[in-house]
Length: 340
Image 1 (cartoon, rainbow, N blue to C red):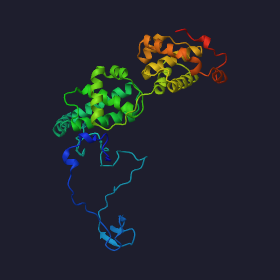
Image 2: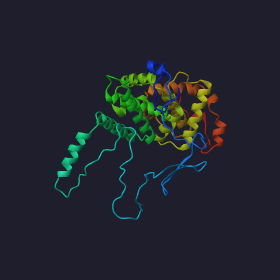
Image 3: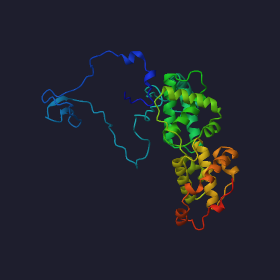
Image 4: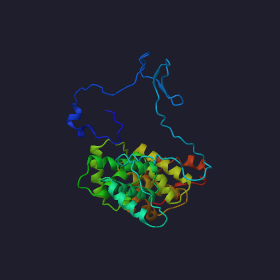
């Protein structure tokens, strides 16, 4: 079943009447040329002459059509306000037709227009829209604070609106829903963010985010992928101010460890942290377990435990001759590594 709705419901959540929908005739009105009867029709609106013409055979189907285009011309160097009266673009994340008239707040300093604008805004406010706007502001502020792209922010907003429309998480706090939406948006757009980072960002307990996340996963169709260590490696190395060649060696070590299953069962965060610890000492730019633990959000014991497994298989995991032939690889040796 294909759907244009973002984050459609899973099959088990569809209503029974939608599954067994009876056959109904197509009542859509379509304009077809009575002469050539080509489907789909090629109808052309000639506003200059006011005619509706078939683009295939030239038959005039109607006359005196209304020109819906603008009756002015706007130039970039013109002074004054834009004569456009169509208003701002519609926001698909809000409900309603969004074609309301807004009273200006400027009236020469008397203050009457400001009061009228406030009263008019309260009178025409759509029920529930204020909560949506507030939630969207919180999502944008949180995404900006941890340098997430606009596409992640928009995906989280779409998911939040879908949850609110379908009432999928009744009884859950708004903060927990926002945190789960941001986490799912990061996973869907392949932007690695850990549960710990989302908890620190939203100040929502990890268990509460996990409950909302699992509930949404079971009810909505999302393209969430498992977080990999390579994405975390780039961000962790950047925060630790390690050069690019160290990052590349760390990513190669992560992939090699996955192939051999050296750190099977370890979390992606632990794998990335242990590989950074090993590579930093190998390239003589050592980073302590304390500094790596602060950046990665894992304990020092976890890093040392994973590093012990890497150190035991160091000769199978790392091609030291290839690294020596690469940039900044002169004099590399396993002797520089710290004993576990």
